[in-house]
Length: 96
Image (cartoon, rainbow, N blue to C red):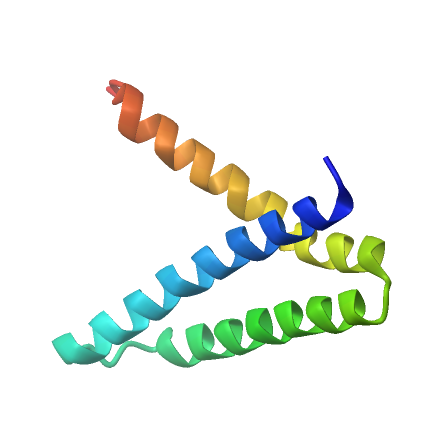
């Protein structure tokens, strides 16, 4: 696969994680929960947005390899977590 495909796949994984986090922050706010982890979540969302923005900036400057590396550092962990969650949903392991 070409490097640009890996770039957009990494952007998709990171963007999906950001959308899920934003959904949880908004749903907590609408339910009236004022947990102590919301400021941390805001900081994590800001950091992930900055990371994606920096990757697009690197892509603009023609450094697609560095942009891919920047996206896939958290993308590998997020994709692995998503895969494990999907496997737990599909196979419903008996954890007695």
